[in-house]
Length: 536
Image 1 (tube, rainbow, N blue to C red):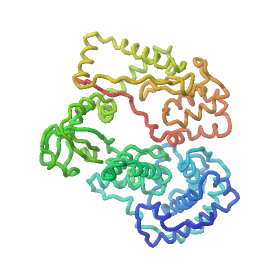
Image 2 (cartoon, rainbow, N blue to C red; image 1 turned 90 degrees about the horizontal axis):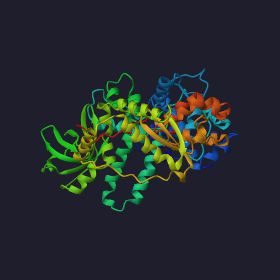
Image 3 (cartoon, helix red, strand yellow; image 1 turned 120 degrees about the vertical axis):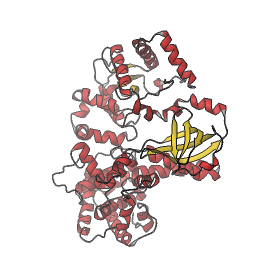
């Protein structure tokens, strides 16, 4: 642990590669931080969770926080302001009677140590109230307090988080989101670590090295548009909107950047401003602005098949990701039209215009009627598929569609190229002998296994008190289980569960939404599980 931190380790937390004047100062400070976090009385506990290299990372991470506050790069302060907007307080967990925004705070450092440990490693979840976190933070705070009046601002760093007020280029906007997610200190243990691991996997497994750059670019673009951070479950575009500030005229434009549509399209022609394309699976038509696409001259034949990604920015569709074209292929077209996954690429567009909430309300009411007035049912695992089939039949019957209407709907789907999918039956019993079905008002029916003992309810014959804590933690931390189901447990069962009456369980309730965002970062924002086919 005596090895010092070197300049390349420090620059690894920066969106630039070459050392500048202030980096020498902050490198020395990083080494002093490393010394105090590895020599205090609680350092052995800290080193139980972090490898030596990760201790170096933590020292650079905390020093980068100090540099962030000094240089006003607005990263942690954006988190603080967003957290205050959501929860009416600056940070989770800690007392904030003496907390000063835009200055260094003991609570900031305690929180950042907790966040770093629980993000860089996922084997154990560490409580924010552990003594070793507080003592580590106190030692680092004392060091930063002495350096406060003398630390230099990094004006060069600040430039990377700024954008011109009248900027119209989507790629300039995308660059800031990329820097925040993949090149900033705040998300270094989170999205930066994840993208680097994935890129290394792509490099090691790609056999056609001539296509390596294309695969890497596509993965980065896809990850940029899909990833949520453990802090508040926000995307890069949302963090960019926070960092540039409330008064910046582009804030709303950042927030309105669409999901990325990646898939196969037909080329349908072009004019001076746009290339006309049609999404094969859904038959949706798009005008792709030529400001983003300079390969229009290579497109000659209508119905040439294109594979590409597109994103809506400032009411225009921009090319984003990779591009290649191929000749007409009837088998590929049929497969795309019959692919539920390909159709789901444009779900968000239908959800903007179709009556999704009305459909979900009808399904929810039918579920209540089918299940004795309750939105949750507990059944043996081998009965789950049968329960869903019976409910589906019940819901369809409740629509009271004539046989003619039903045939017309099926015919529209076939005319649209969709002939239905056949899912292989799941062997739920491999996970648990019993499970539950929950109608999520935001998405539809969902299935959860090994969680029944989180629900001491009259209609649950499978509740086991001795398993309740394990099942509650699975309910909270498993990304495949919705936030709505977790909160159904809290809202309806917390008074009956020992876990919530004392200790960490009771303390978690004060910040339960923050923690659910942390644990379920990519699934926190529940989306309707509805895909439209055969529309008139």
